[in-house]
Length: 135
Image (cartoon, rainbow, N blue to C red; front, side, top):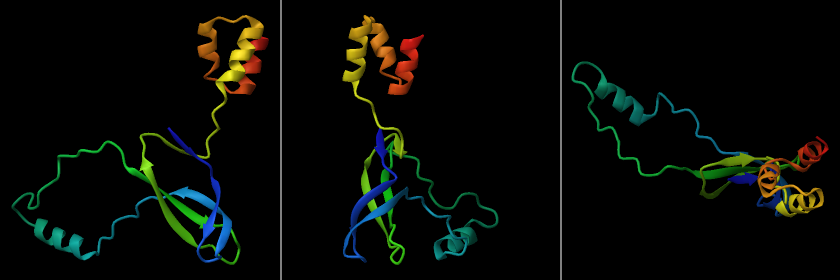
């Protein structure tokens, strides 16, 4: 699982220095009904005769490459650029950071909890961990 922060300090080509950038995930825009290929396809499909062009059915990939859209936060700049990262099944933007397992191990040793309890506690954040130990 890939977790990317919502802001990143990186180089801006327009400002010519490192600036904070707002990070969003790139999404494909809506296809235009008036593009030449779409007009040609619709014209060919019209009338009787069924499907005229092959429909691709041999999809090999299970994931898509993630593309980040970086926007400079500087008021006068606001330049945008794309940054491609690797393929991943689960992508998260600005989610909670992972907690260290070692903290839970120490707490479990102090309170004499079993290994099974340790596995359950690893799934919770540190705030939830304190609540669980009070119960």
